[in-house]
Image (cartoon, rainbow, N blue to C red; front, side, top):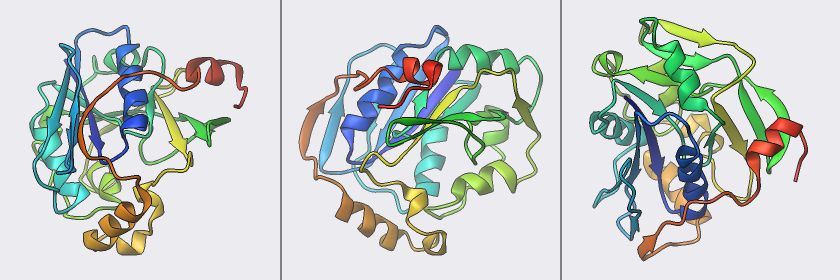
Length: 231
């Protein structure tokens, strides 16, 4: 089984698109685990292979939130999908084809890159659809930081990394869209989660109460990356 782990905080509109990209996959031996740690909002979505965890308190850092999220995933492989990114078409089938070989991390050479929902081609970033084996996850020492935790767990802990380059890639990496991006808030503040979280709280439109999620795409992202046409 492949678990898709998605951390989220106070932006259900983008989250709905990430969920929809999971529902569009053709690989059924999978689950999506959504970890929300905003104490002000409860997300609801009733679907057999999607688990929404509404944690009652905010985690002290993104690193610790990620550690907890990994621990509750059921899959032998855990794909990290941030709530502002999307699974590409057939992403999980592609990743599953890589796991026939034994490695710690499976990732693609590129991701599809959208800036303000305009297709910009391929991107080579820290997360190009990183999928971690459960065995490796159990060896990780998760850093108590809120930026570059992905660099640490992917590249700084001696992982054996498989990089696939078939011409098809598993993730649509999105930037802009008038929302916050943790990695854009300053690497120099990585150890200061209070600063990072304060910046995020100043950027979000506050969500409160119970929200029933309605997964959908706002535009046809799959056709966009296929044709290279912006919006």
